Structures are given as structure tokens and as C-alpha cells.
Image 1 (cartoon, rainbow, N blue to C red):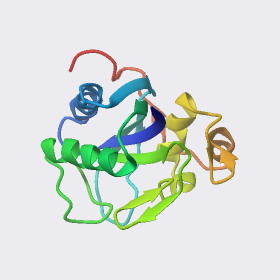
Image 2: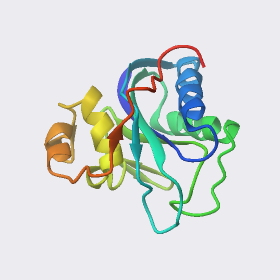
Image 3: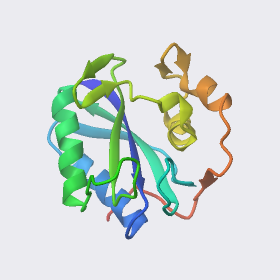
Image 4: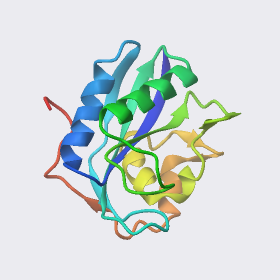
Length: 166
């Protein structure tokens, strides 16, 4: 089993239900065991397209899937939740990104690990620091990267929990 970390986000539809359903789908998938779930945060959108705020969280998993098979699983779960890839950095019902897979560095068509620009994105680093502060990505701990960025606009949502039934 390999430890991996996933980033989840949603800003269309019932955002909370989308995230909870994604965690449930991961938990029910062969070769995947969810080992930790971060708190949920509301975050401003990233990119040039006008859109509403996101709910974001991170999930730690142990997996026997290869990086490509895990990516295929994440994409399939996104599709089942109505994800359409029409505009880069556009609004989405569900986004599941592989942030780290056992510390591997991969640069293949459609799969780059660790996730590109991870260290620049508060919407990823804040929840990831909650579950994996000592994880080293690009030569730095997640906690150190988190401390070095502006997390303005990232708001904890303690009223939302991704654990439990959907």
C-alpha cells in the first residue's frame, strides 16, 4: 500500500453533498482506504473565469492502485458527479486532484506528481496541512509551504463534516 493525498473541490450544485459523496465513493473503491479527512474550507475561486466560491478539503488514502489507475478512478468519480471539462480553471461540480503519491515524481501526459502549483495554492495547502503537515513536497514540508503563503479568503467551515453517511 502507498500513502497518497487527494485534493477535493466543488463550486457548483450542492457543494457539501458533492464532497461527501466523493469521499464515500473513494471509501467504497477497491484498492483504496481513506485514512484521514481534513476539515472543509470555503475558498475563493482560482483562475481567470468568474465563478462562485469553492468548498475544499484534502483526503489521505492508502492505496494499492498505481498512480495512473488512481487518476482513472478520480476522473471516473468526477464524471459520475457531473464534471464537465469545458473551461480550464472553470467552475465544477467536483474536482479530485492527486496531490502526492508516495513522494513519487511523475511527468507524463495527463499525470504530473506532485501536483503542479500545489505550493502556490492556499486552497490546497491549508487543508493538507491539517492532515499531513510533515509531508515533504518539492523539498519543503507542507506546514512550511502553508506558512509561506497568503491564506486570505480561506475560511474554515466547522459546520461541514465529510465523515459519515452521504
